Image 1 (cartoon, rainbow, N blue to C red):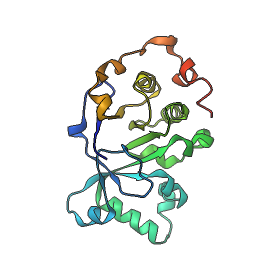
Image 2: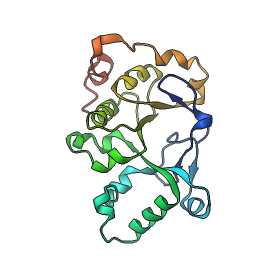
Image 3: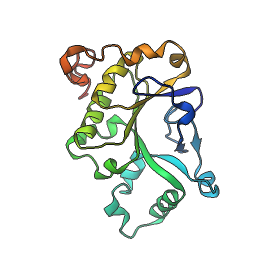
Image 4: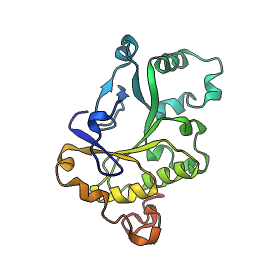
Length: 205
């Protein structure tokens, strides 16, 4: 997970201050966090960490909403309880395709996360704009971070729909990245990024 930097919405490199670790799973994409941690490491360390979990697995096991966690459950629910006990803060990561069909009915548990990382699988995939915008409209006030294959010329648009921070590759981070945080920031009269020409027809694909 090395060779990435994290920038806040103002274009400042906050990598050295970022404390989030991604829980190691087989489906973990590169760049979700600057580093990862295995379940064994997490449970054996006295120090509590800020931990990112895969939303897809939480939803598959109905482990996201507080109401579900209050019910009797099996071993996976017990494991999640242990993770929470050994973590300072909990966040989730997912690809936008996971939620694109349920933007009007997003899981309530999402709104209680400390950090949401939206992973962009391909540059031309505009679904991340719709998901971020929907999260903000539903009242999510925490940090939304974008990782994956987004382009630096998309950063200004992503900021406008509600993204707070960005995981950027080493190459882009050292290539005058500051310009990407101001370019086009006031263009198109306030239209949502998903409707702009660059992304027309991609947000619902």
